Image (cartoon, rainbow, N blue to C red; front, side, top):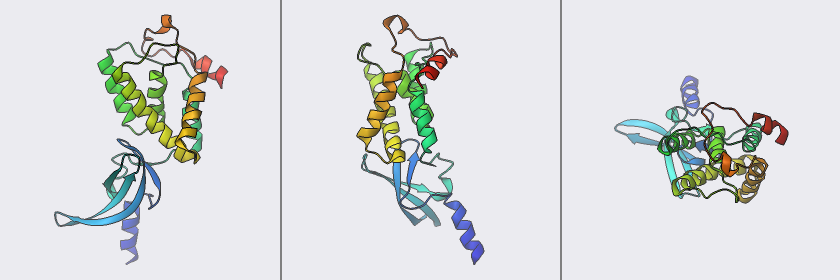
Length: 199
């Protein structure tokens, strides 16, 4: 009898009801329940994850939670690292926009806080810079929304306060002048020295 209980607990992979989690394709949600459903004659235990802002509910099999990339919220140290990442210089590859857009979308849907933060850093434009294209703006806003929600959940602050923290970090980033608007060569790590000065 005790062995049966032990087999169901690892299936939940450390997640519990009421806990905020990150689902890669949708961002921060909350586990509202753990239900059992019968599908094709098999009993399946599911996490019921609610995304309040999107008015959406997702059911994730408990055994597949990790393999689909569902994870706990980032630790406060990782949030600090993400905010520090925003102060660095944008690193834009010399590739066609369609290829970069795919890479940015993959980073946003990875669920990795630092990868999503890189998208915000790379697509951010100050008021002195030319406006973003429609597709750049869409990707920027999607990435920004993901990090705002996670930072507000981790730091237990409102989304408005989280956005202020992000804006403060972005304000410390080196401004890209018009002459620097051309993309940097791939693999160039310019800006690491600037990141240390701003920190």
